[in-house]
Image 1 (cartoon, helix red, strand yellow):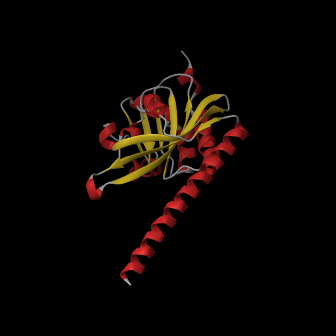
Image 2: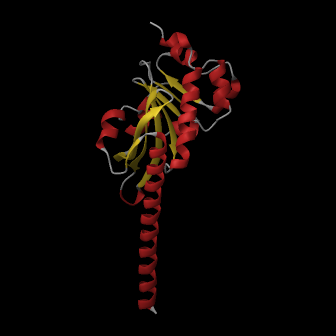
Length: 217
């Protein structure tokens, strides 16, 4: 009986490993197809360029054993764009676990002060890294749904204009980071090709609602 249980446990482990491998192969194929359709370049392997180029994003500074995979690069509505899967580990020993985050971003025309907008249940994970106090707005609904952190309050108020607030309230799961000329939207969990259009569309909509005067001078 004991031998049978051991064999069964071994078979289950092998099945899980095979299912994970099969799922990953399918995900690669979906990313490759999406990239080919939209003129993006795609590489599935671990890419140190992700941390070198985008490591300033606060969410990418959390935990340890950080790495970026499934990097896609291209152009979205006239903006240089990229997307990738990021993962990091929190805790240690038997208490550690791996966190997966999907990232899509646009390179803006110029740089602005560092800004982070997102639901409190997401931002509390990186509050110690970011270090700025939450900014309140006249819209009670917006202040309840989102935390806004920025050292430059005037820029935060300019960015979170009435049109932006109305748009973000329609998508209360949005988590944005803006820094060094990069506007990024982050998604909890494993990134799939089916998520990419929606993430880039949200970024383009946010950019369109940024006031024109921010880009003058």
